[in-house]
Length: 182
Image (cartoon, rainbow, N blue to C red):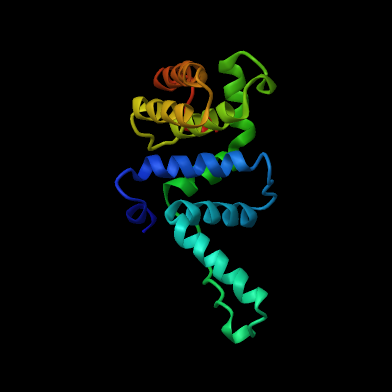
């Protein structure tokens, strides 16, 4: 399973990959679910073992450059389907982005065009997670969002993200927002 491969910090690693995939959509749009799957699997492969991936790409390029026959070329990879927590986040945010954005805009009290890309992706992830029927403790979700903000955002991102997600978490606890809100 994907979770075992990723190690002890499984959910955190999956959140990081989900962030990277969703952020990359600003530069490479995924029009179909299949394109999103390919992007997710590419990021997952890179996160698992960048050295092996780099060596494989160099070997593949060398094979093509040397003009080796098809039989000597690397075998095609078997068809894979994305799975795991990271995929749940990526697909869910991708499918529910418009609704997530309207919730964020309501609680941020500003237009989305005034929120940085990094912060918006982290907020989308956090709101999506908070509104899952089987959501974990909201404090963990907020803590993970803050870690992502420290890792990928600017020095004040975490405060902005914490404030908005805290307000949304309170709304969920008070029953003003629920999984059916998505």
